[in-house]
Length: 325
Image (tube, rainbow, N blue to C red):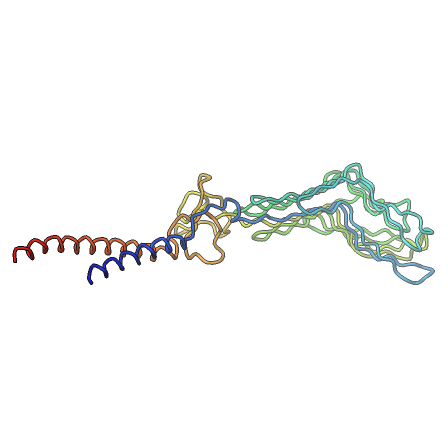
């Protein structure tokens, strides 16, 4: 009877062992799947204007964009014309013409970047066919967001700027007002920037417009015009182990709190079991929740084998003694 019991224990252990092994999750390396792409965008011109009409007493919206892109994309159209019902007998109206008008947006798991560039450009309003709202030599906007780094935003206005035919001097980061008797007024905001923990935005010029042309059946034009704007949002990058050399450390030995630093020395990171749902999906080569079952199964196999061996030895020892009796 004890021999049958030992055989049963061994058979059960041999059956349970492979089942536990099959239930174990295999180690796997997912590469870049632990990080997500950033986002970016750029636009050369955007208008949000309201055009009042004299004879109909109504309003016509002028909401147009030129070269607005989202990553990954680029555009290089240099002119924008629209038709406005009730303005200049419905003839096409030129809003912008430029020598260069480029918008570009890129994004991957390491960096997202938006860029807009405008060279030798003129923006016109309905009712002012011979007078430009604004003329610029060159304006640019750029926003860069890298995983684990502080986002950056920059914009530039190069060369002369003319508003309603008047040359103006712009103040960086400030507001400039231009008033033209009999025409209207324009307020310009130069180089507007915003930077947060994981996002950035830059605008070269933003104009608040209020003009009264009284031409081509136009009573007034009010609203906003934006020239060269770029935006980005950083990707969720990998975070190096605390105390490692993958990034600047904070007091106490921790890494930067951004959670997006690159691995130290370009090595592969290993996720820690039980680190939460927000942990990066990287190579799982450490212990897992099935490890205790594997250890228990192994111990059971060893114990069963040792017991079977001991029982067999006792049987062989007892047999001669029984014969002599």
